[in-house]
Length: 333
Ligand SMILES: Nc1ncnc2c1ncn2[C@@H]1O[C@H](COP(=O)(O)OP(=O)(O)OP(=O)(O)O)[C@@H](O)[C@H]1O
Ligand SMILES: [Mg+2]
Image (cartoon, rainbow, N blue to C red; front, side):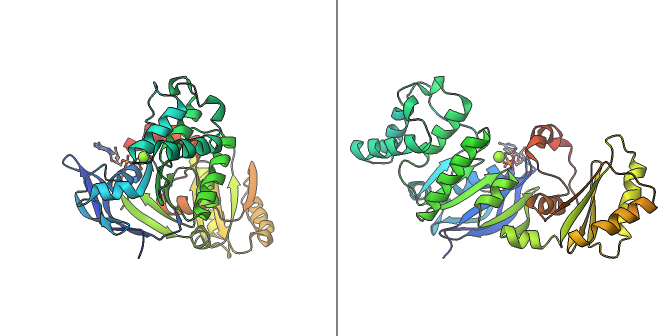
């Protein structure tokens, strides 16, 4: 039996914000399952229903065989949850925070202290354990918040963008820890905006967009679905729309092209065995009088998968800007 079973889940905010619009998926015991999507896709809404913080409008969700709407307390006992936005108490020290959390989950003081000490070590806060969380940096607070979700040793973890705001070093340390938890049998459901993270960490993932799952599979399966390597032609930053359209036409004209996609001032053509096709791409561009700024060959990445299914790139550098433009995105047919 899957550990998480979601069927036709719907969440409507107010009258007509269909944040989650009929989502079904399963998470198997022992998996790291990734939920990937652009800003406003419905990731947090889904996770909040699963951790019983939010009532769904329709559909069903079972966690460890328990209906999240009929027995929320039993669900909460079995899971750990770290929310997207950090909720640590500034007045408590890091150590006190974790011990209190353990006590709230019914652990003895001795057991809670032992587990707190272990976690402080893992999240590299041992030296700061006696300081008020209010004096911590953003990254330290994020790590403490995450540790709070782990004190009672849950077998199933829900993490909403666990590494957002961490520097690369802390992010990698956290991946290592999540991996080791998973190796010890902890099932992990996480949302992320980092494609590299999803690729490195998850066994399976679903891509959600506008409240709907648009793709699901292992990273390998999804990348294989792209249909080959990408040869990306990047034009100068001031290239006109006409020049971009010309490059698209040239690439579409190649015999080997499976697919062609444009983004900003780059155009990618997907081909089998990309290395052997570079020369013909260069020749075709040359014949068309195109003078690209850059030509790149890459194996398919989750970034490409994401672009294929959502029509957008999801790069961390772009996240801030996407936040600003998310409201303006139109629903695609
Ligand atoms: N309390 C609320 N009331 C009304 N609309 C909401 C509420 N919470 C979320 N929404 C809307 O529901 C949609 C999905 O939001 P959600 O937070 O689930 O997305 P997300 O995928 O987690 O995005 P992000 O990557 O920014 O965290 C968005 O359009 C959002 O504006
Ligand atoms: Mg969110």
